[in-house]
Image (cartoon, rainbow, N blue to C red; front, side, top):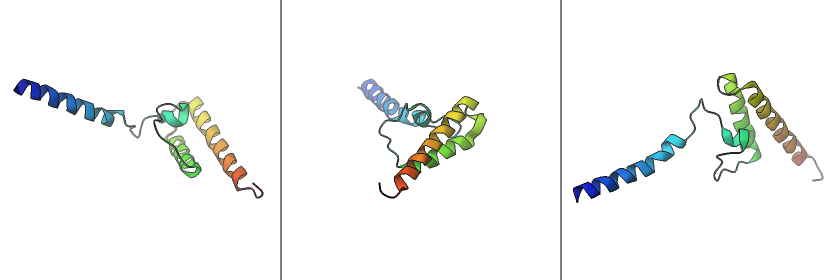
Amino acid sequence: MKRAILVVTGALLMATSTGVYAEQTPAEKDECLLLSQKCKDQVDDIFTRMQRLDKEIQKGTRVYTPQELKQLRQKLAETQEMLRDMEKPGR
């Protein structure tokens, strides 16, 4: 009986703690922004997306390759252009 309780408790602890390890650390790439992967239920407004892109670009080459930084800068430029288009009168 004690063994069964111990096994169930251990399984519950393992199941609940895996989310902690899956979260992004500050020195880790944001694959949702970079590759549109691991996004789960994440939906950003345009300002939040611009802030997140800028934050990731600020990490520089210690986290991203030059090609990935170029890709992030391009996505930021596209997002800014989208905002400008939305702010134009007559839309």
